[in-house]
Length: 483
Ligand code: NDP
Image (tube, rainbow, N blue to C red):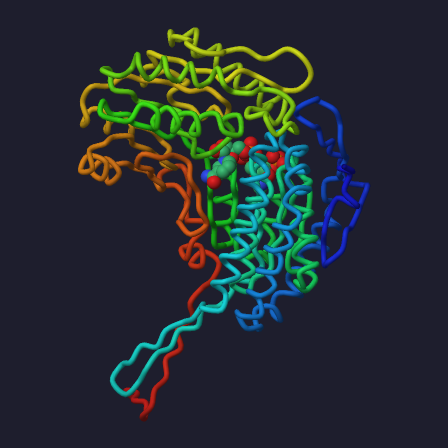
């Protein structure tokens, strides 16, 4: 596959290049080899994108929802038809195994395009009768949206932000992470091919400063970021200065509580999906696994047996179920946390090492006997490092699970129905799971509380974050005034 894109940016319905921008090498994480080069957006490129997005928005916002939705649904169909090629590209971009990308990336992007395409026609205001008078509300687009993505789900993030923005009648400029710049260009291409008018979905490349330039521009009305908490703070503050709408999808250190009555096999599956899918590079991962002391040994033994079945290797091989980290930098961060875990007294029970050879591979890693104060139990690692902590009492484990600055997700495994719902109600987290983990269907709201973010992606809730209501008061009789 030719992984070098036609040009770095997609603006106003066409590929655009400006080689004066800083070159960004795209590295295939499985081999460390360069597979493409793109150039960071120059001020001229940023200007072109903003001008195009501004110019195109009004006519798009004036179209009917049915017309807008039809284009999004057509794009969803094209994405599904090209799932194989898009998945291969995503694997080159991120290193995630094809076994994952073929079912989780372009497919979930297509789901978002289809879902919001379907919703577009039903976006309405309401009628409020006030005696003889009445008010009606109009649901209007915000204008120009900026989406800024992380590197773990480049296609999905490009669609999770683009689909609701476009459904509501906005235009969008998307800046992928500099680590994974390739897939969003394909999303732009497909939308254009599906009939999206030029200028409505633009992609510009670059590092944080390109994102910052977009966020601070007065022509931008809304910013949606998927990234870390420190970046979220900066972007939120910059957006606040211009009183812009925001959605912040940030990091986490989510708990999974496994009670003594839980099905061991299912809870081990939950812990595996919640720690090792995408080599642990998932924001909602349940990296603090609280296991009841009565079943701790059984849980750890079964976990180790199951991890022995992980197929680590060439991500393009459909049998491979565990790929490399996205970058050398991310690999070093995760290995650094493993050293911290060891030095602070956690018991390494599985993995713990980088894997020699080409590429940024490391072993799935499990620490047991982790205590709440250890660095590996407090900070987001964003790598395949699971911490197992002991507990015996429900109230105590609830308090410990919630004792974190984050609040993205949380899971509970138990056969006790009342306890499951009580625990879910008491979790301080935006997305909770009972006897499952890390599902993210487009139909359900997704997002965090506390430092994990603001707003929700997916579902009807996202509509609130990509549109605004205008109230129109209509007086039927004469109007009174004091003088
Ligand atoms: P970063 O926060 O480092 O970067 C996120 C994006 O923001 C990148 O595109 C980055 O550009 C850009 N950026 C950096 N600084 C600025 C700035 N000052 N102004 C505007 N944009 C800026 O996150 P990572 O890419 O390392 O992704 C990992 C993080 O993302 C984790 O914390 C993870 O939890 C979180 N995440 C959250 C998800 C959620 O839905 N809640 C989902 C996936 C990930 P560049 O990197 O190119 O310089």
